[in-house]
Length: 408
Image 1: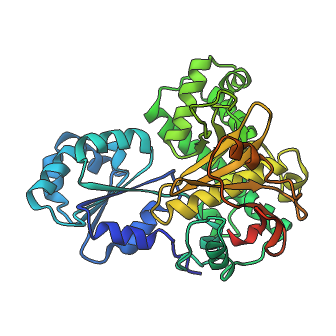
Image 2 (image 1 turned 180 degrees about the vertical axis):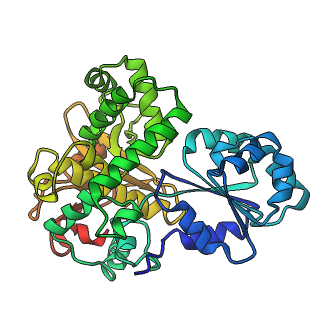
Image 3 (image 1 turned 60 degrees about the vertical axis):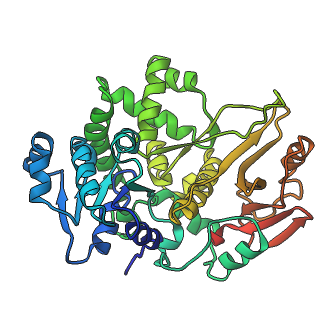
């Protein structure tokens, strides 16, 4: 079965305009596969996983670029930041679109190097694992980023595949890494055990010196157990038995390597009654479920994390609908001291669209009641959506519509 990626069209578009294209994301999300599928026969492929090639890139980057002249695809570019100034010089001499395609994980340190060396010359694209549509083989369908407007919802519904709760939690439990989503026979526990070993031994050691790998794994498990919750670094540090500063540093590592997303709160300067702590989300629900030791989709669906993991899946699908269309995700959440809350606020043209995530087939008419607290602050709030397990669009009130999870 072919699994086209929604990001393909955007990658081709920016590659035709910029001399350098950088695709970043966690390990195993499909960066290299995507770029190699778009390369054509005229582009050389080279990976810095090869020790001899990496040695040349680090010690003699000028010779490296003579040996692997553009157009070229350089994989795992984060291992040789020494290349970037020489790529800049090559670009400034020729200034042709599509000269260098780069792929790399660890986007934060890599982005710092890119910003310093290739400003104005590079297009940066963020990539996550398969969206549900991609896992179904529908990644080449042109669908807009999610927004709870009638026009967008109708476009999404026209190609939606119905989704029941059992199928959803099977999808959540296995996760969105292409190797898992594309191969139903893949042993899930073996895959994630290997993934963690590779991640800890390579990325973590590159990003920070972690002396106690078991403590880092405990920290990972504590983070996974808190997906969908407000960030509390002190609690994470206590669970992993590490210092708060260490926990803060390790959380940055998880963010840097594309495993964790921090959803920032919306707040206004005119009020102090808003919570200003980000919410924490794991970017792959399968890895999250593995770390928290749910042995099957059924136990996950019936367990204490059922609602939080559903919310996490919705948030990651919303992110993919934007990032895989080459757009920034203008997402916030809202919560005030009176516990009025909105899971996601999507900003568009200065107006805000509230979205709630409910693992329910019969959501309450009050599911978006938090929007009224925003309106009282003078915020321009549009009608919103409750993404849930209803079988079809269902108006809940004048300002809220229940939206089936299957549209994602």
